[in-house]
Length: 192
Image 1 (cartoon, one colour):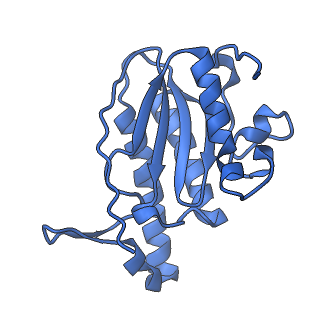
Image 2 (spheres, helix red, strand yellow):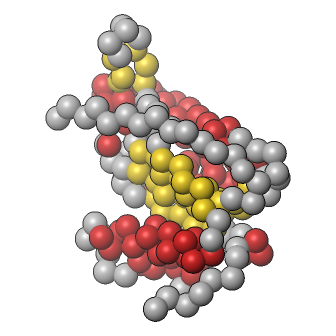
């Protein structure tokens, strides 16, 4: 399969805006289908949250992509640096693990570019998707969209049953692997 999806993303770093981020694994491969890389991702998001001063409002980790809704606490921020911190941490851990324990997996991560440059990737090149959100109703709709991903894909019948999501937090069933910053979340209207 030839997978050439490559997105360029224009980021707008505006104070008071939430960011709906989507980023994918290299060539859409299911690198996040096992617990180990999902844990690396959760750790990387927590580390980036501390380093770059943002709140996490919602997330879902799918086998080949991630949806993350964040709200920067500082008026001066660069969402690109947030993503770089997350992605670089996961890539570093993945390459270290694969080189030591599963070198036969390295060809799946090889990015041989037309320029002749060769490197190993965990994440797809490009900026992914970044949408600024400001209205509480739009934020609520996006949270529902994020949480519904595993259901739309037929992985589970209920969003809150997917382990790698904040849906169970919102349903008040259990805390997911990444804590939600409830204090900064705007008041949500009940879904109709």
